[in-house]
Structure formats: C-alpha cells, structure tokens
Amino acid sequence: MNTYAKDYGNYIRERRLKMGLTQEEVANKLGIHQVAYGRYELGSREPNFDLLIKIAQVLKFDPGEFFNSCIGEENVNKDT
Image (cartoon, rainbow, N blue to C red):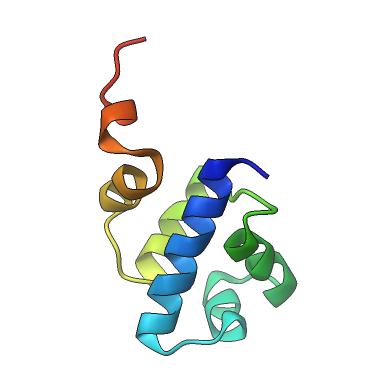
C-alpha cells in the first residue's frame, strides 16, 4: 500500500465519520458495494478520478482541498 492511498483513505474515513454516515450509506449513494468503498478507506484500492469526484460530492469536500491534504501542496505545484 502506498502512502498516498493510505492518506486519502484516512481523509475520506474522517469525513464520513464527521458526517455520521456508515460505509454502507456512502457506498449506496455512490452506487458501489460497501466492500469496495471500505477498500478505498483502507487504502488497499484506489478510486478512479470520476469516483473521487463523486466521493467528494457525497462527503461534501472540495477535491482541491483533498489533493492538497493527501499529496501535499508542495508536490502538486512541483515542475516536472
């Protein structure tokens, strides 16, 4: 498991808990199985971009805030 996966998993778990939702409730809103959603929280599976946007909508956070939090602003703005 990479650090990024663990970081975003923790991030979405914290957001879900703050909203008082279960994994099953979030998964139902996303149209996916609870086991799949649970793997995203554990960081053992990475959602594609479209699903990340849906997760952001359901958990009411700005995707930019999410990326800065999980990847780090210094890495997002790096020239390659």
